[in-house]
Amino acid sequence: MQRDVNYRGKFFFTRIQYDSGDWNTDQRMPSNLLHSLVQYTTIAVDTEEKVVPLASDELFQSPFCYLSGHKLVQFNAKERANFKKYVENGGFVFVDDCNHDIDGLFAKSFEAQMAEIFGPEALQKIPNDHELYSCFFEFEKGPPATSVELNGWGDDIIHKYLKAITVKNRIGVLYSNKDYGCEWDYDFRNKRWYKTDNTRFGVNIVVHALTR
Image 1: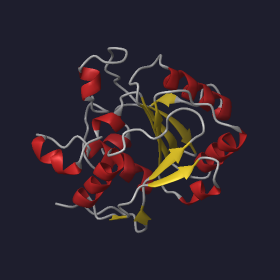
Image 2: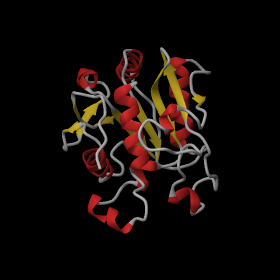
Image 3: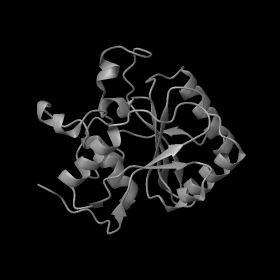
Image 4: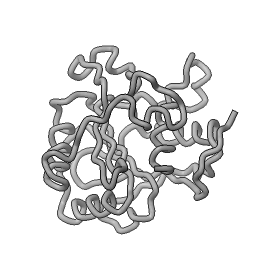
């Protein structure tokens, strides 16, 4: 059954392309998540993923952006300026570390970029009773674990929290070391094999981004 969500625009998924690193990861994830939005919500959805260079002003037309990778994140001057402007003017970026660790190159370099742009204390843990975890589906224990964490890849840690940069009392950057992109990187038709649809938390992320 679909639940009504108070968002009347047409949602589209924007993947951020940046010059450094490998931005084009988990290629089936966007269509899988978009299918879940259609399945569970009343949000009007554009089913085609958009890829937008971070240095492009087209970024500012996007209600929701996704940034991921395994390698170095080192924004050039225009990318840095656009990221800052987008977030500070109401944009939402979901950032997912495909290495699912805290000591890898992506994690260290991305966090360094955020400290440089927003200040060293800007990226903070968010509590597991944050409204992100109850705005659509209920996740009483906070962010659900991923299979890559449970299989002991990366740093052998199940990350019990997510981090965020908050601007004007709303999340502007949601940051995960849990590798949700890899977790949701499968053809949406294969959901029938899952006891519980693991993309449901992705629905919460989008709904929170659009309605807060």
